[in-house]
Length: 185
Image 1: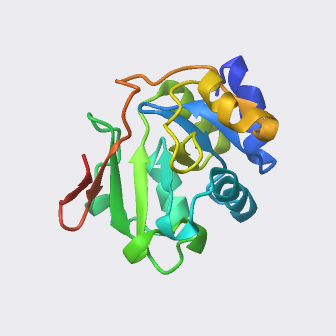
Image 2: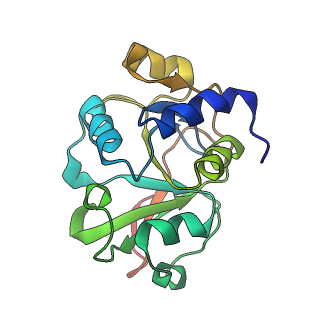
């Protein structure tokens, strides 16, 4: 697989348990390897986000979610491809789901990214990454690397230059896959 040069450092950071800033199809993101509990704990600490709120998991392929959930049952509930507008789907978390990713009501938040850089990172990592807005809880979201660096200084391993591919100014909508209820528009 061909990886854009600016992503090599980000991939190394992810593999070593580091935190990165990166563009997504919505806001500028703060991320880490979703399967690394220590990295996720550090992300929550840095963001000052309570663990019980859960996190969005970003993937580029259905296989990344199969690996995470150790099940393919979720495929009957949500589209296994990017949506327009960008949509995060809440699915029931199977018993084997890593506890550090589960949000309220035993749900997992999943989104298939349409952003080429985010997709390349997932593909190169061969798995999902955490995707949360790059800002401390309660502060305005960052839309680019410069704004994220203002918040986090040198506490991230890497900042990937770039911007969202759609509006880049709003978070993804969140939909409960069971009820169809839109949790966040």
